[in-house]
Length: 49
Image 1 (tube, rainbow, N blue to C red):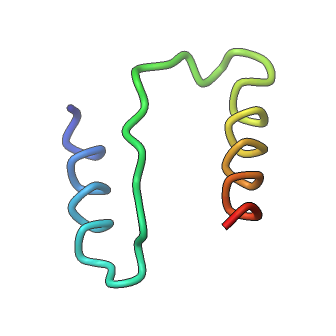
Image 2: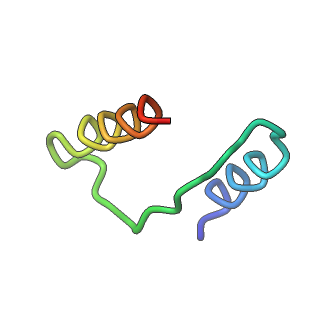
Image 3: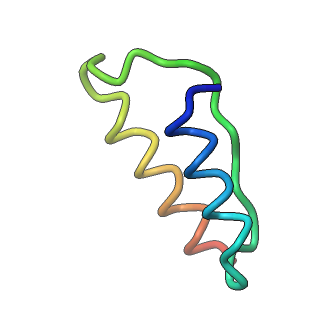
């Protein structure tokens, strides 16, 4: 895990309102549509709760 990812995870752990955090496998974030698909899925998950 990179230092910036570890830092982000530690910050999430300190937040009292975090319900869950999903650790994703390494991805090529420059791949067309990947980020949009991930954000859309996250929005759908949030709306379902």
